[in-house]
Image 1 (cartoon, one colour):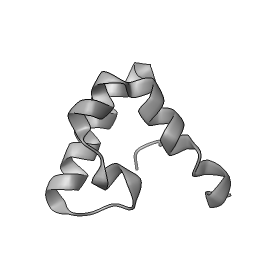
Image 2 (cartoon, one colour):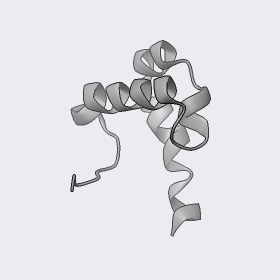
Image 3 (tube, helix red, strand yellow):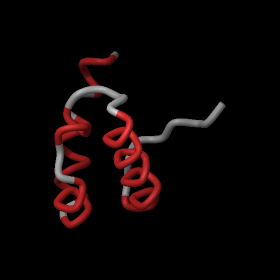
Length: 59
């Protein structure tokens, strides 16, 4: 089973690939599926900050 890590610049490419895959298959939840992935990649720091606001809700 893969180890999940918070999105960061280190894993940017892998994370964006996973979001593209989720968008193509229609799987996943919420915000990442509705985002323009090219815009997210261009300002990845803001994209990650927006996603991380959901962390406290999952706890």
